[in-house]
Length: 187
Image (cartoon, rainbow, N blue to C red):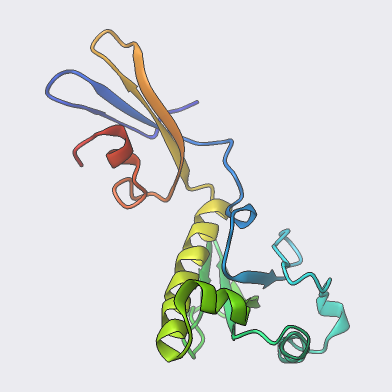
C-alpha cells in the first residue's frame, strides 16, 4: 500500500497516512435520511423499501409524488450529481447546483420520515433546518465513500516499530475527519 503523506514530530515519531481500501459503506450505518438515487452507470442506494425504478415513472416529480403519498415524509429534497474526474453531490438549494449540464443532473432525492425528524430534532421549521444540515453531512460522507476518500494511519516509533494504527477516516481533511486527533498528532 502506498502512503499518501507522512509526518515526523520533534521526537522522531512518524505518522504515515494511507488510503483505506477496506472501509464500510456509510449507508449501512444508522442514517436519519433515506437516499433514493438512480444512475445507469453506478449502483446507488435506493432505500425507500418501495422498489422504485425510474422506468416506472415519466419524471422524478411523479416518483416523488408517489413516495409522498405512500410514506408521508416530513421532508423530501432533490439531490444532484456531478460526474467528471470524481463525483460531487449537492442539494441544489433551489437552483441547478453545477455549471455543467453534460456531466451533471438530478440523480434522485433524499427523504426523512416524520418519526425520525421528531426523534432527532423535534418538530417545526427549526427542526427541519437542522435536519437539512444533517443531510448535507450524510451526502458529504457518501460522496467521500464513492470517491474513495477514506484513510488510515500507522504511527511508528524512532525504530520504525508500529505503535498505533487506525482506519476508516472519511475525507481528505485529516483534521476535520478526526484522524490527527485520534493519532494524538498536532496538525
